[in-house]
Amino acid sequence: MPLLLAPPQLGRPRASLAVAMLGFAVVTLDTQVVNVALPDISRTLGGTLSGLQWVVTGYTLMFSALLLFAGTLADRIGARRAYGIGMLIFVVASAACGLAPGLGWLVAARVLQGIGAALVTPTSLALIRAAYHDSGARARAIAYWAMGGSIAAAAGPVLGGALTQLDWRLIFFLNLPVGVVAVLVLRRTADSPRTVVPFDWTGQAAAVLTLGALTYGIIERAGPVPFVVAVLAGAVFVTAQARGRHPMVPLDLFRSRVVSVALTVGFLNMAAFYGVVFLQSLYFQQLRGASPFVTGLLFLPMTGLVAVLSPVSARAARRFGPAVPVVGGQVVMAAGLLGLVLLPADVPLLLVAAVMVLVGVGGSFTVPPTTALILDSVPHDRAGTASGVFNTFRQMGGSLGVAAFGAVVAGQTEFLNGLHISLTVTAALVLLTAVASSALRTRKA
Image (tube, rainbow, N blue to C red; front, side):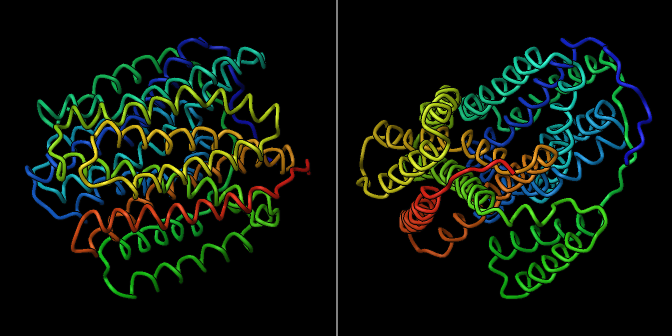
């Protein structure tokens, strides 16, 4: 049984909420703000398509690989301290990104950014939980927290495009004042409770190696060796989870068909969304000659509707059950992906942006009820673990989606051919998971 080291204190709830919102917003912003700057980064620092993929996946890879570890660290040293460490890492890494003299430096700094983001995300929510003891007040605080992240995601492409018009390095320097303010406000929050919990060092190392080798193999197309390493490391991870005393991911979660399908849905949803944002940014600027700012504006309808429609999907799930919006959202997303394939090469850019809206709408109707499906299918004492695993799978999907989309494009002589192949295959996979989702029925364990 975990040993409580420090009792929770009341502190200042608004300070905790402000810190949590700042942290989650800036971390979410950096998943979207970089894409529209990629052509300018390439012109300044050089590098091929694979190098630009690493600029995006270096961040999301470490973000996804360390999310569960960060939750354990927050329990062990306290959410307040873990948040502070994560934000300091994030700020230092952002400065290093802005000062990068070459692409390799930038990728390394993005990896460091991902480590900081992984520490900030779960601890920001833990700060809210500790500060708000009334369930109603806590629910409202979490809604504000989520809204901040949604607004940041929607604003990311536009803000990135506007700053890139001046200098792409500003998209990273923007994080510095936000991070400094967050650390200063953090001093006004209460100390967090700490519990003695063990680390799953073997599982964590194997998880990072598995994802790193798999991503490297996909992006660099370096032959079978990286994939063999990924398989061996994956086997070590599964063994550690099955036989370890304190696994990060209890394997019995996957015995539930609902959980397994929901994790697949979350993975593919983010792979499609991140892959579309990555390649369409290059398409708008390199093939159609749009400026970074115009490119950001073209993304706004898609990303903005994600923030607006998420509450609507929650109401639809309550009225019809979570399976209905999950299936409908995936069908709409697949329609958007196939719509982008069928558009003629010289179609007006506004029409391309309109078709991309279907991808965003599909995602906004899929993720919240998929989360509900998972939480309704596990015991109450597993809800936190199941939610963490779901978020990890989603971030893994984003990272590997960018890697796979870029690899397909790199393997074709024409950019549009690679783009269309990526979108078609992803649409087919999304439709398959929609069929699997249609038969789901939740049962509280």
